[in-house]
Image (cartoon, rainbow, N blue to C red; front, side, top):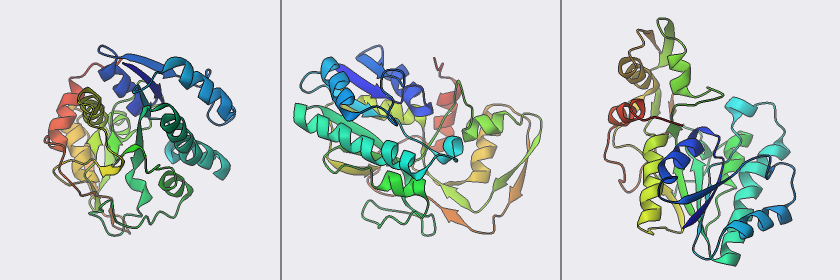
Length: 266
């Protein structure tokens, strides 16, 4: 089976590539081959149709996030986070490909928590709005929140905590989270492909336990042996980004982080 992967150099995409590469022919479409922001859609059609046949798979791990692209224009967010997934879905429907797309808990504002797939999207910023509008109903959509290691860029939570080894940081005691590691999600994606267990629409993928950002930082500190003094900090506004739905992940967040530590990311 051939798999076209977008976003292979990003945090999640790198894990997905590492997990799939030994058993599938993974074709990574990088920015020098197709620039999502600037190239025309006909080029996208050509690249995908040149590499895939019926029942092959497209995985979209590409996206623009505020942590790395806070100064980009609304047009850029809409092009990459909204229009691009719909174009991939259009191509998939035309050619009978399987299309798996990753979206985010940031379609919600975090005021309520325990969000189900039926909850109204309440995002107020351009990132959340652009991701909300980029969820094609006819695709396999995974909505989640992820943490992982990075080889470049190093903007993720894990990398930020690691960068403060032997130092001091603050951890929010009233920000709640039940996302998954990139490694866990990459393995779930592989299992979906292995078993041909694709679905149409959105599913929430989340961990069986809920932690605060303070507790999450403490896990990272302990597991990576960082010797950080983590101060409890209560934000002025509580934030609860937790998701709910059908249980899919067995390992706790701490167990997932241990697996990340012992995984060699290439």
